[in-house]
Structures are given as structure tokens and as C-alpha cells.
Amino acid sequence: MNVFLPLVVDQALAAAVRAPSPQNTQPWRFVVDGSRIEVRLDRDRVLPIADPAGREARLSCGAAVCNLLLTLRVNGVRGRVRIVPDLTDRDLLAVVSIEGNTHPSTVDRSLAEAVYRRHTNRRPLSDRPVPVSARRLLRSAALGEGGQLEFLDASGHYAQVSALVRRAETEQATDAAFQAETAKWAGRAPDCPDGVPTSAFGPPADVPGVVSLRSSHENRSIPPRQFEQDPVLVAVLTRDQGAAADVRGGMIMERVLLAATAEGLASSFLSQPFEARSTRAQLLAAFHGLGHVHTLLRIGYGLPARRTARRPAAEVTTMRSAPEVAAL
Ligand SMILES: Cc1cc2nc3c(=O)[nH]c(=O)nc-3n(C[C@H](O)[C@H](O)[C@H](O)COP(=O)(O)O)c2cc1C
Image (cartoon, rainbow, N blue to C red; front, side, top):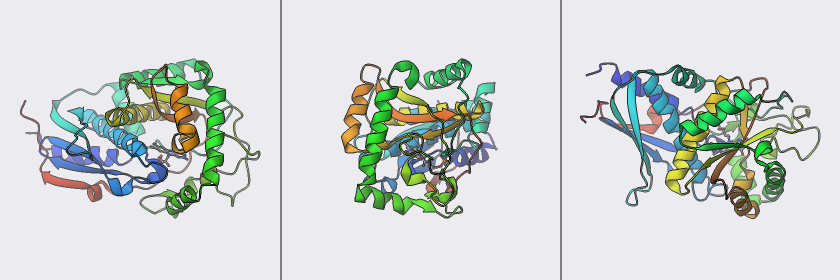
């Protein structure tokens, strides 16, 4: 028996809760039961207006699974994930089984280390191009989790998707229910354990209509700044769709974000066209021939922004029985 296993599992759960989530809602719960770690959706933390189907929440739980597996691995513990669309228990999204020992790779180590540095950067990024080598690396990060990453300038979707982002932004700006929901979560104090603090907002753009930043996350008390002219935008895709594909999509998304962080790249999200009624179907249709699109990210070089807080892992974990290695 590995006497360090409980510590390793604690570390893995601490990494899991560093995952990104819409408005930092942290819509997850974990149950440790011997060799099983269940990853469960916390329905009370799904955004009813922006995310009524819980899609973004499932992506977030998938991102938490990615961090959990990576952290087990760099501590020499092999975990295997089973994504479980369980019709009798719809909130159980994934089960990680602890299966024994493994040897982490250098890539595992650099990604696991990036878990604590990755953050959403809503500041202007520089116009420095993202080199081909970095693009290749991010694509292979997606492939490594069984997904696909499209750079929208290369795939020919840039103009169409930017227009959908702008249209969704306009729709949400006049949607009172959306604005009320955002006001509930965004603009909190820096030490608040959930929600998005104002310190993580970006400055307003000097010209209106940039796609880089959603207006709900602008700090209007600081001077406007110039944003990059043509932000590098990527789409995370899977072949399938549905709840299980969302969890997988979240794992892919997180691996891409961690690879970007390890490469010195900043990142942020553009979720408006998934959330607004008038644009969602068009966005999905735009990528139809390529796969199912889960998320749009902006990637580039810039100064780091502030990290946000999390609820401690212990607060979201139920310990049913001490961690152990599965008897295979
Ligand atoms: C599925 C998903 C969608 C998100 N959409 C947006 C978005 O549209 N705009 C934004 O500024 N941040 C977005 N975020 C980022 C979250 O607000 C952020 O992850 C959270 O506040 C925690 O902060 P961190 O990423 O810096 O750790 C999204 C995150 C996830 C996982």
C-alpha cells in the first residue's frame, strides 16, 4: 500500500478545483470512495440563464478531471477516467479509478505545473504572432485528449465567428435576466472564494466592438486601452456531441489551456455565441463539417493578470473511504 496515496489524492483534488468555470461558479463535487474518485455536477451552481443545459458546467468538470489525472500522474499514480453518461444518476459525470503506479513524462510535469499558473487573462494582448511551433503544440495537446483544435484564421471561420461574438454580445447587453445573473457573480472582492473579482476584469477597449473582451467583464473605473487588432482565436472540437462529449471537451480545453500556459501564452474565453439564443445554432452549424464545437478561446502573448480564488477542495469533497489502489 502506498502510504502517500491520501496526500497525493488531496493534491490532485486541490489541482482539480483550479479548473476554470463560467463566472468561477465551480460547479463540481468530488466523492472519494477507496479506489474511485467520482466527479459530480453541482446543479446548484449551473448558471440558469447563460447555461441552462449545464453544458459549460460539464466543460468545467471535464477541466477538473484533466487537472486531477495530471496531478495523480506526476505523483507516480495512474488514474483511468471513465466518462459516465448514467441515466439513473445524471449528475455523476466521470469516475477516476486509481490503478497503480506510472512514470510521468516531461510534458506531464510541465502541464501539471501550469495548473497553478493558468488563469483567464482579459487584458489586451500584444500583436506578436503565435508561431507555427506553438500552434502545432496546442493542436497536439488537443489531439492528446482525443480532440481537435482549429485556429480560426487558418480554418476560414474567423470573420463569421467574430460576427457571431459581436451579435451575441449585443443580444446579451439588452437581456435583463442575463445582466442580473452576471451581476450576481461578477465584480466581487478579490478574496471571495467564488465568482469573478473586479481585479480579474480587463480594461475597457479604446474602440467599441472588439471581440477580445465581453463587456460584462470590463473594469470601467480604469482607463481604456488598445486591444490587439486581430486576436488569435481557436475552437475546441470533438467528433461527438452530448453530455459525455462535453466532459471530454472540457478535458481537451484544459489541456490546451495548460499547454498554452506552459508555452508562455495567455488565454481567455469567448462564450457569448454559445449562450445567446440568436447565435448558438449558427455557431454549431459553422463547424458542422469539422466536429462539435465546445469552446472558443483567445490566445496570445501578454502580461500576466490576477489569479482568482477557489473554495478549498475539502469543502467540495465527500470522503466515503480512504483512497486505495484498485484490485484489478
Ligand atoms: C466554459 C467556460 C466559459 C467561460 N466563458 C467566459 C467568457 O465568456 N468570458 C470570460 O471573460 N471568461 C469566461 N470564462 C472564464 C471564467 O470566468 C474563469 O475561468 C473563472 O472566473 C476562474 O478564473 P481563472 O480562469 O482565472 O482561474 C469561462 C470559463 C469556462 C470554463
